[in-house]
Image: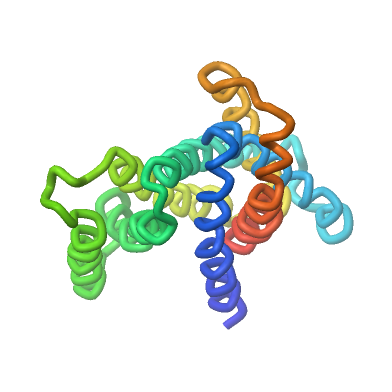
Length: 229
């Protein structure tokens, strides 16, 4: 019951985050937005760890470091594709729906990669979700599919991959330290990419996007991903 409640709250938080990401995209390029988002999200967890997880998985534990690197890299890739897709489509509703296909992709990928049997309901759900994606995205024929739609769809596979990495590698680790380190990895990768390929970050743009960043950092990142783990 508690786990189901956590997933429900996480879904609500992530649903609203698409609106925040769309607004933040007006001021910050995708990698810059994610760099601030993940470093701020990691900072939010520091006092929480000091209170509730003083004796968690040792920081030098190889399993923790490997899982954090893997999860952080997948999270960096998935969120970059998502933020770029949100920026290009300019549609929070469509972005949320396409990204939400990862909920169907997780059991499908499990069935393919790990020979975990998928029930008929899963395949029916995958089929119906595909129809829904077509109806919400392809309003003017197949040529109307935008680059943003494609990036969001590819990103859904990485979001599914993130769920699988967390499940397979993080189940035996303490949650807060695992979440903190994956945010740091995603933040470092986003920062490097932003410095290499995006325009300089202006202070006034950061101030203008602060409310969106705060929501995505504190709730979507700090709370949402931690509850997910």
